[in-house]
Amino acid sequence: MGRMMPVAYSKLVYAQADGIARVTLNRPDKRNALDRELISELKAAFIDAGADEAVRVIVLRGAGKDFCAGMDLGELRNLQELDVMENRADAESLRELFVQMRRLQKPIVAAVHGRALAGGCGLATACDLIVAAHSAQFAYTETRIGFVPAIVSAIVRRAVSEKRAFEMLVRAEPFSATEAERLGLINRVFEDSAFDSQVEEFVSHFRSLSSSAVALTKSLLYATDGMPWEQAMGAAVDVNTIARLTDDCKQGVAQFLKKK
View 1 (cartoon, rainbow, N blue to C red):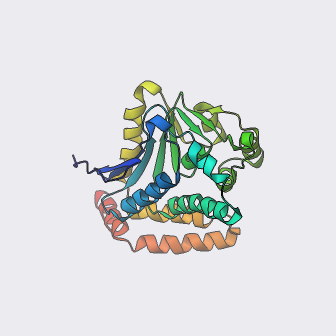
View 2: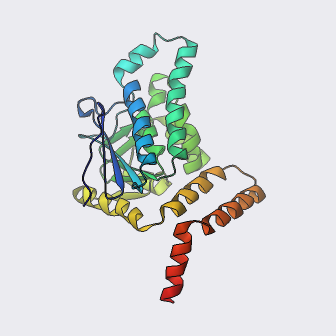
View 3: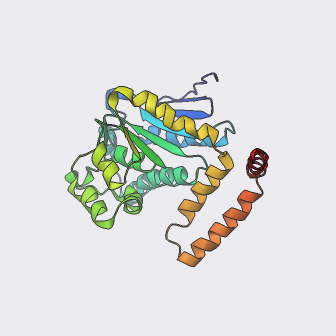
């Protein structure tokens, strides 16, 4: 069993053990609401996980009763004082986080309990995989206050059908974990009573997989999104070729043939 090594963050907790990096939003009194500092710390935590060769998978969770309730109220008040360029820079920061998460070679799993609302729902959606407790609630609530769930819309549109995406993003109604799974927005729903153990089992599976193969698969999946079919097939050939040259593939094939 690896030793948990907390990193000095003020609004999240980062720890790594046995190939799993655990990033926990740690503002339970604020329902883990997002502010500039927390977004900055998330970027730093993903950099730390990405640079650690021992890490196979990253788990993102929230402390307390909820995953994340969206933007901090103080941040919302501050937005009213910003000019157009300052607002653009603020929005750009969230875009940078979501792009960073997509480019990170290691898979990020959101483990959602309680509520994931507005920007919190967006943060979960930006992860590669989402597992949720049966009682979890999701909602893109931005349109209720004249805001737009703009940054996350490109991800939602790729996860579900156009009409479902429109309904989710515009109506601002909460939907259950079961409904989110049915629509294809999340991957698994676990019973509340066994949530922690089932999350652990789900993410631990990545320890048995080739880290280079997972990284190449993630990169290919997102790189080919929107490509014409023949171009996507060409990219697939390139990745297939690269994969054959990795140590993981050479060793894996050799072991497989030895068994046969």
